[in-house]
Every structure is written in C-alpha cells, then in structure tokens.
Amino acid sequence: MRLWELNMDGKVAIVTGGGQGLGKAIALGLAHCGASVCIADVNLAAAEEVASQARALGPRSLALQVDATVNEQAVRMAKQTVDAFGRIDILVNNAGGATGPTFGIGRVLNISERDWDDTLTRNVKSVFLCTKAVVPTMLAQKSGSIVNMASITGQFPFAGMPAYSAAKAAVINLTKSMAMEFAPHVRVNALAPGLIETPRTSLNRRPEQLTRLLTNVPLARMGTAEEVADMAVYLASDVAAYISGTILDCNGGQVWMTEDGRPNFRDADRKPPKT
Ligand SMILES: NC(=O)c1ccc[n+]([C@@H]2O[C@H](COP(=O)([O-])OP(=O)(O)OC[C@H]3O[C@@H](n4cnc5c(N)ncnc54)[C@H](O)[C@@H]3O)[C@@H](O)[C@H]2O)c1
Image (cartoon, rainbow, N blue to C red; front, side, top):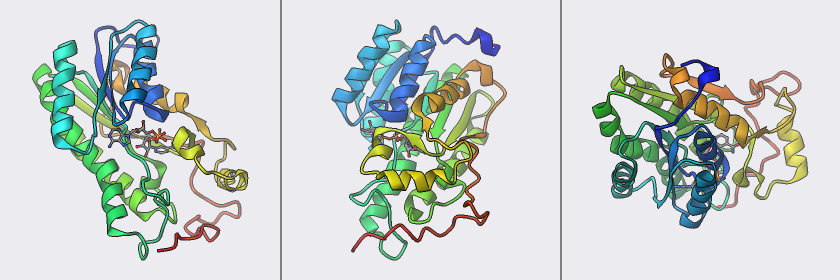
C-alpha cells in the first residue's frame, strides 16, 4: 500500500488511554482513515465521548473502561473487542505518563518507592499486559501492528524525572524485544514524542517554564497531538509494512542541548519536591 492509498476500512484498532490527549488524537486519526476503534481508558466518560466523535466520522467504535495496568482488564479488553468487531489489527499502547502529586518530578534520592512503582507500572507493565492480551489474536490472524508510546526522555533522560525516563527507556527496549519475538507477522514500533501540548502537559505549567523548555527545541514550539497521531497512524498502517523495531522521533528537532551547546543533564531551576 502506498501513502496516497492509505485506507483502513475493515481494520480494527485498540487505543489505550484513548480518552484524551495523544490517545484521543490517535483514535480519531485511525477512525478518519476508516478503522473501527476501541477506546480503552480508565475514564469511561472520556472514552465514550471520543467513541461518539469517532462514530460521527463513520466507522464503528467502542468505549471500554480499562485500567491497562491490570491483567484481567487487559484480557477483557481484547475479548470484548474481538466479540464486537471480530479481529484486532492494531494496538496502540498509549496509556502512561508521569504520575503522582509532584508530576513525577524528583531525584532518585527523594522519589518514594510508591511513586517509582506507579510510574513503572503505568508506563511499562501496561505495555506488557495489553500486548500479551492482544497479540495471540494477531498471531492467529498472521497480521498485526503494535505502536508503543515511548518518549524523548527514554533516549535523553530528563533531569528531575528519573523514574519516568527509566520507564520510557524500558518501553523502547521492550519494543525491540517484541519486534523480534512477533516477527514476521506482527510489527512493533514506538513513537518518541518530545514536548507535545496535551491536557497533561499544560497542567500547572507556568509561561516562563515553557519559554525555558522551548530553548531546547529547534523548531521553537510545542508539537500538537495531531502531529503525533499522524505518525502513529502511519506506523499502524500497511504503508509501514517493512518497518518494525523502529523508534520514531517526533520532537521538533530536539537533540537535548542547551543554548550554549552543553548537554542539558542538569536542571537546576527545577526544585525537588519536599519529602
Ligand atoms: N504529551 C507529551 O508531551 C508526551 C511526550 C512524550 C510521551 N508522552 C506519552 O504519551 C502518552 C499520552 O500522554 P498524554 O500527554 O496524552 O497524557 P494525558 O494524561 O493527557 O492522557 C492520558 C490518558 O490515558 C488515560 N490513562 C492513564 N492511565 C491509564 C491506565 N492505567 N489505563 C488506561 N488509561 C489510562 C487517562 O485517563 C487519559 O485519558 C503517555 O504514555 C505519555 O507518557 C506524552
């Protein structure tokens, strides 16, 4: 299939964390291309709203309340999708994010064990469990495409976010392991977004923080959820049929250097949370 022929009629996709932000944009991008989409989110009301927007575009859509970090719920998600649509062609493991009251910011010396576990569970275990629940259907079909949501922090650790950075680095490596394990019939790739405007990243952000963060972004702006969604749709589609085990950057040209050219491994302005 060539890019100008991109058509997902008859394809079935699951997007975890599809209720808002990047997951919502990806779910609607897949629906625009004709795929039936299961929107799986802990927030059922948000999932239902996105499902109704997807249905307005034409394809069938299903909203499910799913905590992607709980095995039974991941298994139920796969079963209900097959019951509703008969197959699963695409899994977007998007649920994740920096967690906790401090937005996941801290130093190794003051991150609590609980915040560490929450961050690793939400970002890595969710990918493991949802993939394990869905991939037998794809292997039986002898086709499927999985897109995992990593982050630039998995490649260049962001000072003050060691747990989140470690979790996203694990997603990158897990993507490559899965790409080897599930070949030749199932492709597995990941996206590594940089600074993208979503409800999560705009939460509690001060204008001066954004200005400082953007000094590291050559294209001098945040990305949009739709720009990430277009890349997810591409990787999920048959247009990318020869791409597996790839980490696709979408970060505004960010190579994580400060204005004076030094690697930005220190983040002195950021105060560690009080413990
Ligand atoms: N926004 C960015 O700048 C950025 C950059 C790099 C990577 N990412 C990654 O992209 C993904 C989405 O980020 P976002 O900014 O859109 O986040 P967001 O917080 O705006 O949306 C996340 C969605 O996932 C749902 N969710 C959270 N935990 C879940 C769980 N356990 N099971 C099911 N649903 C769950 C939430 O209810 C919400 O609807 C995350 O994995 C994040 O780490 C985001």
